[in-house]
Length: 318
Image (cartoon, rainbow, N blue to C red; front, side):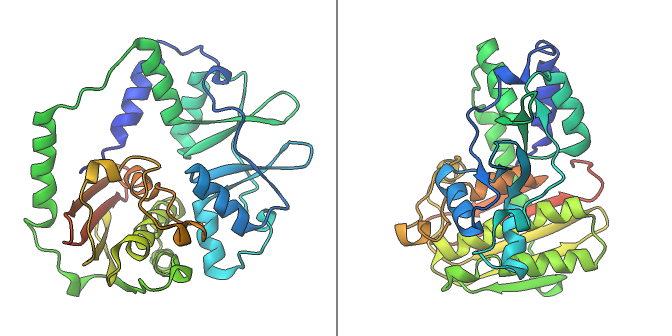
C-alpha cells in the first residue's frame, strides 16, 4: 500500500475554503485525553496504549497547558532515561497550541509551518479544553458535506502494481545499506533500541531534526511490530540517498493475513502480556503510514513482512 499523505493536506486545503470561518471549538476532540506533570512516563505510555494515540497534552494542577508528550519523547526515554521518570522531565515544553475561538483557516496557517500531528486547544484562561488534528477537520468536513469515500478498484490495482515493483521488482541490496540493526524479538523491554540507534546515526549524518523525528517514530513502530507479532528474527536497514532516506524493515515470522484491516487505527492482535507493558495499541502501521512520504508493505500469512518507507529530504512528496 502506498501512502501519499500530502493528498490529505491538499484535500483539507480545498474543502476548508467552504468552512473557513468555522471555529475549532466545533471540531476538536473534547474532553481531551491528558496527563499531569507528575505522572510517571510508564503510566503515560499506558494511557497512550489504551487510548490508541501517539501524543497528548500535559497539564498543570490548575488544568493549564504545561507541555505535550509524544512517541518521540518516549523514544528519548528509552535512549537515556527511566520509565519511572516524571512526564515533565521529558515532555516538550515549548508547545504550539490553538485557541478554541480560532478558525479552520488559523489551523491551516499554523499547520503549514509547523506540521505537528496534533494541537492542544486552550480557552481564554489557558486551560486545555480539547485537541485537534488534521484528520479531525477532514472527518468533520466530510460529515458536513455528506461525502462517502468509495474505494476505486482500478486505483487499488494501480497502487498495487507500483507497490510490487518498488520492492520485489527491484531487489533490496541489504549489503550496501548505510545502517543495519538486528532486532531482538525475544525481549519486549528492548523495543526502541534500534530506533534510538538509527536516530543517533541520522543526527550524526546531519539530517534535519524534523525528518529524524518522523523516521525514528516510524522505525520504533516497525521494530515493535517485529517483537510483538512476528515471533522471528528481524532487521532494520537504512539508506541515505541524494533526495530521500529509505528505511526497510523485515522479518520472517507469522506475516499479516489482512493488510487492510491491520492498517485500521486501533486494530491489534497483541497478547495481553504485551499490552500490559504498554505496547499493542494498534497504532503502529497507521503511524508509519502517516509519518512516511511513501510506504509499501508486502506480507501474507506465515511469509513474514517486508516494509519499505521513503522519507523525502526536500518535502517534494514524490
